Every structure is written in structure tokens, then in C-alpha cells.
Length: 322
Image (cartoon, rainbow, N blue to C red; front, side):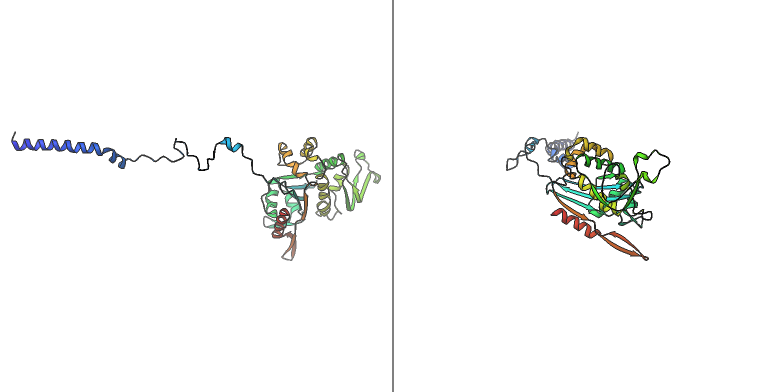
């Protein structure tokens, strides 16, 4: 082996050793650049978080000792009465605030016309022909908020309500502007019925479990089967005012269970006491009564009575803020 070749081999080996030592020292930094480790977020860190400068303890133990904020407990509901013909002939919107001790009652006339499939129809007919969810969706825009609860009464419901009023000694008297003729129940099984077997009511009448059904399902005459003004403005409101003013009914579980069973509602029986303390606070809170305002709309020589949406929502908001 020549001296020149031997010197080359020795130089080459020395260079490999030098570069190897440099690579060994620099390898961690190179690896960190080429293959960086994922960063660990504050949430994933296993180290305990530092306490705030105020020394607040954010554990569940301390939060359980804090006093909860005062809640404005509000109950809102639509109460509808549906007669035997399937028409809704009374609509009442109720909004009760436990914090403000206010009780707002808004009668929504059932002869108001609202578009249904592009055609104006009365609330009495279109709400009667559809389900409760449809009713909530249709009436929510009128009151300016999403309605979640409903109570739908029928003839049997009104019998139960009048019975509860009689039991409490709170009689319901209404003024009927026309004659109501109905068969005396004691003669119902007789085939050949005579005129003497019928009763006729008019003027001031005290409601009872016998006559409430015929009165509720009555009409001014045969030509006004879609005129529910008496049931809407007088009958429904009178029953509501008396029953919701009965002292102690909001905590009478037996009576509440009977009334709950007589109506159709989305409020479960388990929540009856929760809401009844508000619904039956009519005689305890400041009562604000409103009739939903209307306007008239004419098209193709036809004029219909429609809701005055803007004024209605404004009036309700103003009453509830008082």
C-alpha cells in the first residue's frame, strides 16, 4: 500500500469520526425541528390550575353554598274552549309573573280572520279543525312570543269547572242575550217528548252542571251557527274569572286532578302544582285585562276582521311591564 493511499484512508476515517460526533450532539435539535411534538393545551394539562388573584374556589362545593339568583317565574298558556260542533268558541291568553305579581288575561276574539293556506278563515273554524300544535303555532305571532302550553276544554270540562265552583260556593252567573232551549235530562229516555219536557233559559242565569252544556253549545238562532260572541266574550271569561279566583284551589290536589283529567293539555299531572299556584293566583295578583285589538281588511269587495298584530303585541308588552 502506497503512503499516499494510506494517508487518504486515515484522513477519511478521522473525518467520519468527527462528523459522527457532531451529528450525535446535534441530533436532538434536528429531530425537534423535523418531528416537533404536539403542543398540550391548558385543558389537557395534568397540572392543577392556579387560583385566581381573589382566592376564589371554583369547586362544586363552594358553588352549592351560593344563593341562587331570583327567578322571574312566569307561566304562559292558551286556554281554548271547543264546542260539540268542533269549533273553538273561546280563546284566552294568560301570562302570570310571580316576581312582578301581575296576572295578564287577554281575550282573543275567535271571529278574527287569519290566513290559512293563503285564505282568510276565522280562528274559530281553523283552530277547531286542527290539532293543538297548530293552535300554538298560529297564536304565537299574535302574542309576540313562542307559546308552549295549552289547555283545551270541551263540554265535559266546563261541567267539571262549574262543579268545582259550586263545591267552593262560588256560583257563576251569566246574562244570556237569547233563548236557550234544551231537554230536561230527567226525560231523556222518553220516546214521545212533549213541550213541557224542555227548559228555556234567557237573561240572568246561574250556571250549574245541568245547564252549562246546553248554554255552551247554544246559538242565537239557526242562522248564526258561526256566531260565538256570547261564548267568547261572556261565558268563557265568566267561568275563567270565577274558577281561577277560588281560594285554595291551586293547592287542592284532589280538585286539580279532576280538572286535569277533564281537559286536554300538554302540562303533565306531575307539573300541576308547579303551574297551578300561578294559574289560580287571579285573586292574589294585580290583574290586567286586555281584548286583542282588531282591524279590517278589504279585498275583492270582501271585508274581514283581522288581528292588529302591531298594536296587540305592544298592548300585551305594556300591560305585563306595569
